[in-house]
Length: 247
Image (tube, rainbow, N blue to C red; front, side, top):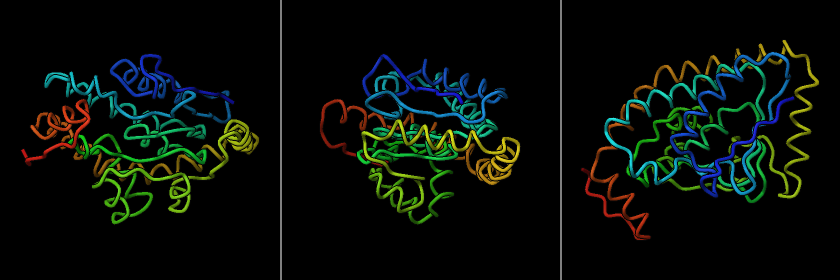
């Protein structure tokens, strides 16, 4: 079994910056070539699974950076879906935005009681184009997905389990033991049967991604250059409510 820890030492909530974004593409590409391990435990740092995109990185992004953002984001998602070994995501804190997408595209999601899950792209004036607009409706249906994606509200671990997003919710102090136990259970199963079953199920996810991923990503790139996005970032930095104008 492999244990992979997402850790960005440049911020305290494990937010994804340009360097980590590129490393995630490389990570899942390498995991796609893994054949010796029978399960992967994907966990965050001590305080968070991942709080999504680093706001300083997002704030400083230039129009010429957006094509690279789109390309690398697509590599991450497709590389993750091509990993044949089952991935157990252990969410011990916030899994937000792209962090939530990574967790929800895993094969099992174990959440601690205090963990939170959500995709608040719209609060930054952005489309959830990094996979969120695809994976949420696929898992919970369009109506429930819109309730969370159009508001940016976060959900508790208990709510996530009730909606079928979380495999299991465990007390905070038991996360390591329970997530390891679940990953070991998968690792002890028939490896070819488990891998091939995962591949078959992921074809459904890939089909949905083929339909909507590029479309949602192109819309996200378009919203990166809007006045509403700039206003949202400024408002967040200034700790005030944004004033959106639809431009």
